[in-house]
Image 1 (tube, rainbow over the protein chains, first blue to last red):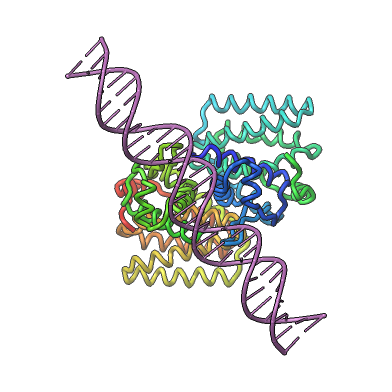
Image 2: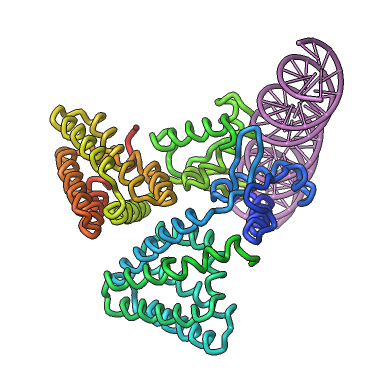
Length: 218
Length: 218
DNA sequence: AAGAAAAATCTTGTATACAAAATGCTTGAC
DNA sequence: GTCAAGCATTTTGTATACAAGATTTTTCTT
């Protein structure tokens, strides 16, 4: 990456968009924000470009940049794609994963389990993320891994909301074990299907997600 | 999008990277290129950022930007992801596609067929692209469609190379028909598998692709 | 008073000027 | 002659100044 400063600004703005400081449709004022960050317009505009490429803001020529929060439909679409990408990871990983990585997943799962027992949502969140990152890596496809990370990051605040739901942690946990089992057996189809079901937002979870919009603070 | 000028520059540079004007590892000189395009460094740097986000160049802080052509491994990985994304489109489209879109695909295929008969590679390329764009759209998932378009665009020069191979047009044509047939039957699994096989680069095609690197001019 | 046209203001897009860091070159010492 | 240190040059990153388009306000006409 190029600019330490623009990077930090982009990250900060991203956070503020996620946590609801900026609502959908809000215009981001270059001058105001530049003053706020204590920099000139130049690095700020560079940050804008990154956010635009991530889809978080929309740049309209000669008009300015506007926050673009995903609506229910787009959110569902993103989760659908996430489920498919991760399912692909699982399908590939079932053939490519090694013993050490499998063991790592089991250990991560054990820590997940401990978090469920102690009702430690933060710990669960951390270990759950770790589980998924391992899955991406074990696809053996670096490009796929990067794409997964990108979308994973984008959906972060919404996933967090979901985990808050009662019973979701335990269910998620059980699904993790099914995934590991399928990977152990080298069963590509089963692994893919288990991951798809784990990630997809459907039925009751869809309603829950809808009820939680706009997203709560990180 | 924001900047008409930076956009044009980004596009032009992209073309030059694709067509081999800039080789892997080449440094892109801001001042030189700015003069060449008749603009200042500012819009040029904005163009750089876009290319960096697309993965075409790498920006190293305080060092400059360098062309980053994908190597064989990364290319294979990208095709693998493309195959999966398109397979997902097919799986979803099998349930969601309507009669008018199916008819459109058949007509596009007919024009493909005509292009094969007249050995018109350009026409085939055009209609083949159209076929895939319809598939993306018919997934019924706008986000997925956009992601597919992004990667499709990125792989454009390499796909073009492949079509030049003898017999590939006819084979591709037959695969298109299998895809349409599966979609007509509403057979999600078959449609996904047909598309995966159509897009994936494996066996002999892998060797051909490797032999064609670096990519030839558009 | 209402609507339209024109001017003033504000905001974005671009160019240039300035600052800081990295590279390369020169010079000196061993 | 070679290596290192310091200086000069080049190049990136940032700030500011300038230009052009968009918006708003004001004023004039009907």
